[in-house]
Image (cartoon, rainbow, N blue to C red; front, side, top):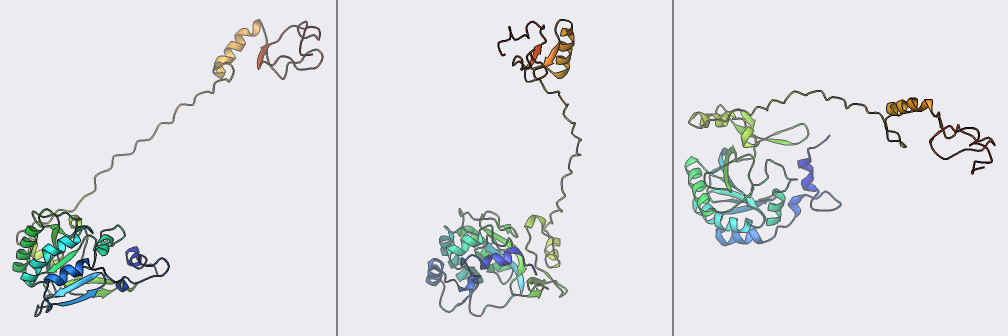
Length: 303
């Protein structure tokens, strides 16, 4: 059985030797300090993994709808939470946030699952009216903030950190053969379909969002790959003759020069030329064949 890498890596970041569950790591106090200073004690608060979930008293349970995401970096997460908490408290809406700046840094890293990367605060409005009101207020209080782009969402107009998408609010899932879970949402006819969290540019319009598309939103056409140019056969480079190491001429030119000079002097290799006493002659690679007098022991200095 082979699990996807995004399901294994979270257990390898907290201990150099053992597979450690990230839920056992104690959070730092930066985000909890901001939360406890603004949110009343009557709110229900609990932790699930990296997330701190906050729920107002008497909040209805909504299965799915339009949700909001606020992105931030590890340096701006505390200030982003400080400005967002009064808006969420006054609206009385359910939300969750990452427990500390270290979790934000890890969620924005390249080893985090792409479906959850970039999300710092998730808001679950009760209806469309509350969705538009909270989105407008968050866009106003977080004006000028910068954060990573959430791949599965579309940004609210005028904001670089507030985005939205349609998805499930409760953990409704389907068990896969490997033991993993697929999040599900209900269609208008009551059947369950997968809650796709793919990039927004290639996201398919599911049955749950098709009614909203017909009411005025235009779905983007599917992306088509660009045609590739035809491959042209490469011509083989011309084979050039190797030049001689002594004369620098080509073999054909050397053969012609040797043929032209055959009438005056015969060319022979150094090893084939011997003196009259049986010892080798001059050191030249190609030397003209001299007369018998020049190869005698009396005149040859190498003897």
